[in-house]
Length: 341
Image (cartoon, rainbow, N blue to C red; front, side):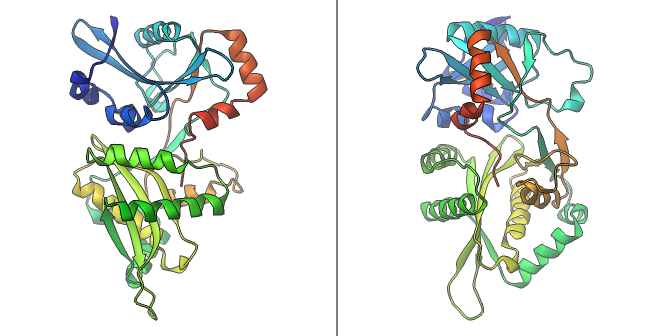
């Protein structure tokens, strides 16, 4: 096995090997607007076995970095060997791995002893994955009755959902997104982040916005109530970011957007709807994400658990000092927390 840098002319081969949009070539192009991005591969002769896309995050007042490798393959010995080489080459204190591997698929696999279970995660360990290959009727049947009812409520109120990629739709989305983060008091990405991810993925046909409009009976004004930014990569549709208005909550616009997102995924001939994050089973009923969780749960997807976060540590002294003082709060902001509405 040999570690080699991935060149641009290998983009197609690289994208065929990765299994999550955060490891896609296009996502790396977006992230390069903010942090250094490394693209390497572990090769067996000329065959790419393990693709690696990792971001580097400088620790203030030092010449050292934290590496972040999200949604990659299972961390086999060969993969960890390659990451050790990269960590030393780029002066990393540690590399955080969050593999895109379900815990149920690790029963017969050995976790490399060089990896330490991380005390904090940057990506949620749980998620809802919805199979969208059945017919629309079958998908509706598997939803929670209240979710099906709310779809009908929105339709009865003549809520209209549009799929768009123009700048006006992006601005509507951005307004609703920041209204939501302010109202629900969570830390969201800034305007520049959203602009860059939108511009980068849209030009490759990997991003679109769904907006729900409502026209009150006593008005001719079309009011945007809900907007989602959706991504597609390989056979998966992703719902990472969204926002909604506090107005006219009774018309259930968000539920209709979710249903139209599923229908969009089917039109694109995709297989899975990835809802980006969820709470674990039996989470505290007072948890601030309960509303997001219940909404996603109502769509009928499978609540899955990933194998979790691991740290590959190169400088224990700096790593543990950083960990004790900061409790990784700096990292959670630096690497841009990924669980959103």
